[in-house]
Amino acid sequence: MGFIVTDREVMATGWGEKWPAPAKINLMLRITGRRPNGYHNLQTVFQLLDICDWLTFHSVDDEKVSLINPIPGVPQQDDLTVRAANLLKKHTGCNLGVCIEIEKNLPMGGGLGGGSSDAATTLVVLNRLWGLGLSKAELMRLGLQLGADVPVFVFGCSAWAEGVGEELQSITLAEQWIVIIKPDCHVNTKEIFSAKELTRDSKSIKITDFIAGEESNDCTQVVCELYEPVRRAFDVLSLYGKARLTGTGACVFAVFSCKEEAEIACQNLKKEWRVYLAKGLNQSLLYKKFEQG
Image 1 (spheres, one colour):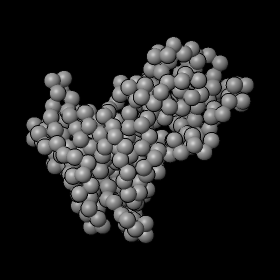
Image 2 (cartoon, one colour):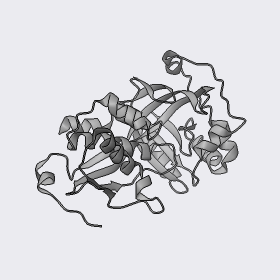
Image 3 (cartoon, helix red, strand yellow):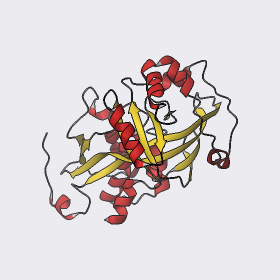
């Protein structure tokens, strides 16, 4: 699929550039209740990572929102980036279009937030490129319509989260090395949150409790029981460090203070597993790019 490079794209800063959509992990996840609408009240800690999808926004001469490289099997109108762009247009009355190019590096269905991050980057960057002037708070509210994890990527820093994950408070975390295994399965989040055996009444804790070492994930036992590849990933990663589940998975991770130890673990694990080596960050690479540009 081709696209037209317009005069506006040539002149405006940001068009045609690659914009990061970073991954995240959940360092802790507690389910403290269930709402009448079926959604769960959570407490979690998000840490952003330095591994990313990359999005490029190409200016077009019509009002259409389209993709250069659609994900096979996913209709364009269902892609989160297209939905984000169209939501932004509807909310503001914007009559501009865009052609979106995605370099997909993050696994789908892994609990690293790739699709949500892609949507957030689309909201944040198009807000600037289209000159819409929405505040970060407004973009976060729009993002929540697309998914519970979208607001944290718009927020742009590591965060303590409550509610369904949208009540965010920035938190400073150690920027350590993360080894991530992506098992060969796709965990169905709805299935996990519907499981009868899932803990839904964990006691609420405070940030100080997390800092003191409370980092459990209430979904871990259910996911490992239902998905054998996740359980096996836990077992093998536990040989190198404390294995933990991010979100509802499927990805399993371990934190290392030493880069060399993390690299050794990756070298050994990649013989059998799909493995990522990442650095934990307190500020999103998306906003770092804004500061640099």
